Amino acid sequence: MEESLPITRREFLKGSGNHCLRWSMASCSLFLLFKSGLSHAEKKAEILQEARHYKKLSQSRAQCHLCFRGCEVAEGKRGFCRNRENIKGTLYSVVYAKPAALQIDPIEKEPSFHMIPGTHIFCTATASCNFRCKFCQNWHLSQRSLEEISYVRLKPEEVVKKAVEQRCETVSFTYSEPTVFYEYMFDIIKIAKTKGLKTLYHTNGSINADPLLELLKYMDGVTVDLKAFTEKFYNEISSSMLEPVLHTLKTVKSYGRHLEIVNLMIPTLNDDPREIREMCVWIKKNLGKDTPLHFTRFFPQYKLTNLPPTPVVTLERAHRIAKEEGLEYVYIGNVPGHEMNSTFCPACKKKIIHRTHFSVSAKEVKNGKCRFCGYPIVGIWS
Ligand code: SF4
Image (cartoon, rainbow, N blue to C red; front, side, top):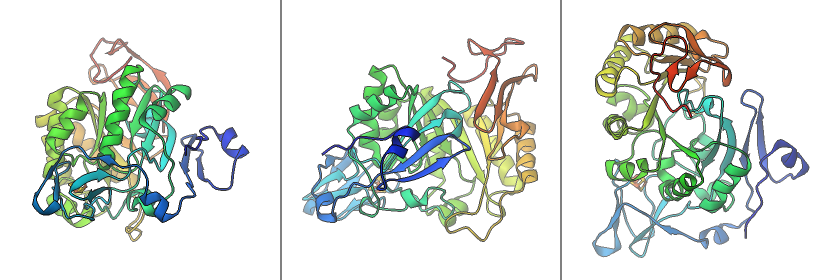
């Protein structure tokens, strides 16, 4: 049974009490969670997709090779991410073609500031995640298993069709961690490329090298959350590891795909100026001075409601440090109206993309170069 997808606000308002909606004036976009109306038993009986990147072991066990955790999954169990289940020795993705969120966003919201600015992305996400971040902004999606949320069935080709119908230039994977719906994402981007769409992957960076390289064949841009620059933070706040994320950053860069980095700055946890400087030095040395870096403002969420929002001066201090270390494109995010939300040419210093929050009002980049002085600006511009 397929359900039709109400994408526009008008269509939504015509419909139904069964859908949960948040209408965000800031982004002028829709966030939908769909009620499937299925019982737990019916959900369990749905089509499953065999996982990629795993190995069958003895005694009907299976080892997943998709992310750094390398879960060894016993028969009848799921991996840490809750999305990959061992059924009689074969590992399956239980969330394949079962999106729990479909949304149209400005590409700036990702954030991806150097990839066709001012255009729209068609975002897709399923349940769950392979991290357990205490500050997660999408915890209602990422910290839930398939059975705990609502979703629809939508095949990869139907996602692409919706993106084209909605005149989105890019399909994007975000909100929860796309790595844990890898097979679905992979099939969508392969089709999307045949339709002339761009593809964008917003990730926590924990994917292993082989599946990442397979993905990059069809992925135009990658936005990586570099949540902090210490193993301590990753371990204590996100139940994860920093090292795999650094490896992913280097792999994306060396493959030649467009890369942007987001650092959500949380008071007292990752805002130490020495740590920020160390991170900026590493980025410049390993990824290049032209890698866009976004410092974004934290607001109390999920299990971190005891901390205040990040003071704007803390973000401005981080921005200053990054510029001192020679990074060319440094942004301050989640502070609507801040001057450092716009793009400035590293050579002539003129403003070349004027942004107010997620809205782009002027672009002075022509053929990938500053219109004023001709300096090449990193990114995808057409
Ligand atoms: S993707 Fe999921 S099952 Fe696979 S290793 Fe990572 S957490 Fe474990």
